Image (cartoon, rainbow, N blue to C red):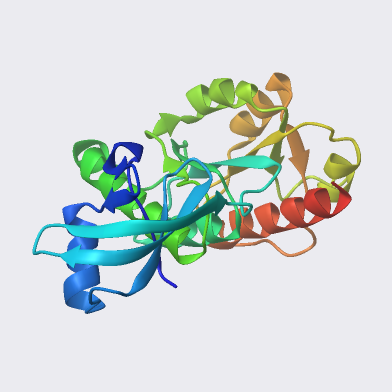
Amino acid sequence: MPKYFTLPENIQGDTIQLDEETSLHLSRVLRCVVGERITVGDGSDTDYECEITEITKKCVTAKILDKHLNLNEPAVKITLYQGLPKGDKAELIIQKCVEIGVCEIIPVKTCRSVVNWDKKADKKLERWNKIAKSAAEQCGRGRIPAVGDIMTFERAVEDSKKCDGRLIPYENEQKNGLKQFCDGFKGKSIAVFIGPEGGFSPEEIELARESGIMPVTLGRRILRTETAGLVTAVILLHRLEDEG
């Protein structure tokens, strides 16, 4: 059963009205008809099982048949601070990290970031958030992970203090890995820093250390920027959710 998100104000009594973009997708792409069933999420961990009652060019209306709590959100909230990559890699990173359970993604401009999207940042963020929404619908999330504004590395380090634990994969780290981080972690939120194609500079790593961010190794092989965040998040969620 396909799932879509809607704003809470679009839920009135036992009726839900979907936005124009979603309605067009249902009517023209999926060619849904009256009587078909869909799942609609309110973005706050509640899902509604619905039956389509009316289809117009700009609005699909559905009747609520049942509602239940969505249990697909991870107990540990991961915020990914992703160094800006080249090309369309950011889209892949966002899509896959949302699928596996990352709760927030912050694009970060580092000293080795090649791209400069200052003039088109708004359009990029709009597209990235649409990708996050689509990925959250596809994998049945209870919430839509936000893609935040682009930050400098220094600002991201400061922003990450909101999390209970913080780590930064670094190829020159020899002692601590994700196991060591997880063994001592008792909180509910983690900040993960991932560098762009060229990695982090020694100065950025030192700033992270001074701020209390733990450098970790991901093993003997150096991962690409589009792989490193995904692998880190999967391992963290696997270990911490199993232990929890």
